[in-house]
Image 1 (cartoon, rainbow, N blue to C red):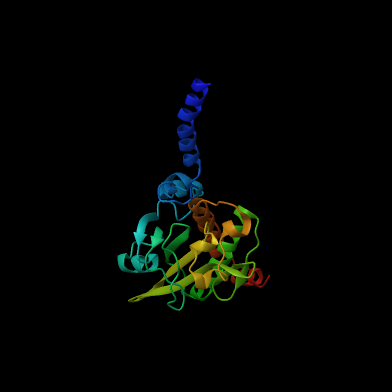
Image 2: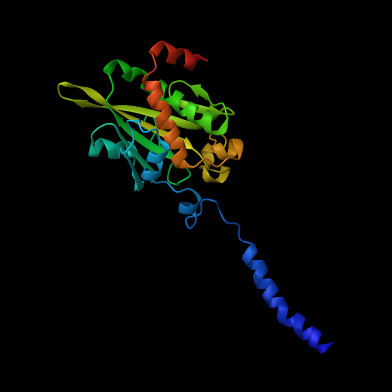
Length: 239
């Protein structure tokens, strides 16, 4: 009997220790597990794009920038160029409103494009359609478009598009196209004022869509939309 009690006395601390190891809940996007949970690398996105894509080998992914739009504007690489970031410390939407993107829980990306001047007024619409195409293809969700630049799910903001231009002497302006798309946020990841007006794909569908996969789908659909006749694109937007 004494031996049995001694064994129980000896075993209990060990059991308690094992239980404590099980208690912490691992956040899918905790800093220690981010790279394993959702690796975000340009080479991987390249592999997901078709060989004919104009964006292959034109993608840069940085760990942190103030704003992907501002970084592309100041660095001015040869277009087409794609710059994505794990986080933005000063992300912004339109008109100059802050975009909450200081966590790696969404797709934060900007593109530098050289397109015909006549296409510039339609670029926000085409990019919104391309983002909706990508969401639909990867999740079967049906986002709605709110003019001029928002994607909505359940009447809450899923994504926003920002289009700016860079003037050039004796040449048509370059286009700066920014996209912010909420992927993995939970309610507590949004600032309090946005918790009832913003939504992520995870909240809407309980699906984890990798950032690289979403970026590749967006770029592929944007390429197709840029080649689409304007009347067809307008009809798609109305629908």
